[in-house]
Image 1 (cartoon, rainbow, N blue to C red):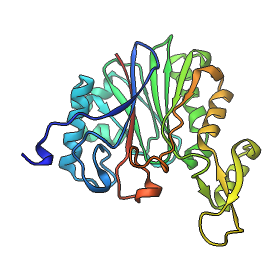
Image 2 (tube, helix red, strand yellow):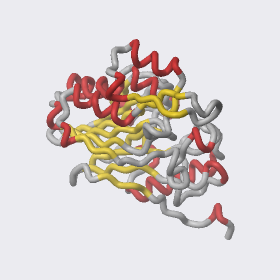
Image 3 (tube, rainbow, N blue to C red):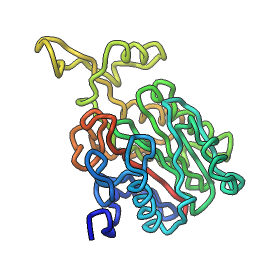
Image 4 (cartoon, rainbow, N blue to C red):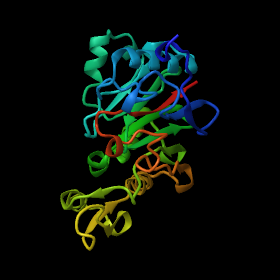
Length: 274
């Protein structure tokens, strides 16, 4: 029996968001992918072998106790579009489902037994759970999505679609790149300034990682920026939790595109109503 034939169990980082939900981020361990995709990757858009992705999906679904067609992940494009997964969506054929999830960076549902999630490898994944309305959401917030305030928009869509009240929401910010590791160019800093962000709260100058040792580069705190957005959206500070894992520094356990290159695996951060 070779490595690809061994039965493996995905090793997940679980979040305590209440007894009615299962919430987690995948690690690099416990899957069938190899090389820069090793071991666990279910993202079909990063160059991994389809057979490995299929086996990883099956292993995760078995662990969650759901059918494969109830594990849903959009094709993210760093925008701020949100999709709501309802019962009619679940009756669509695969092509129709794919079209509905194209260009989507946040998904939400109130249907039990459906695991929704987002894919990241330095970007910030955010999970939301409405304890009263029993609605869950998964948000992909890279720097572009953060500039477009996707976290705040997701809360607004939950309010408009499901009647959610922000102070009933629990949020979990998952593994992503830290302030210390997220060095950016002036154009990225300027994009945040142009959208009215208070830069003193989310950015600082640090010595450049390459080049002139006296040169300084901007660093932006994406987890903090998204926490502030959630607070602005009305969430209570004590209801917003952060994993405090830097993917760039901890790339042995979590995928980091900056560290491993874009042709590497992705973390899946998912949530499911029981």
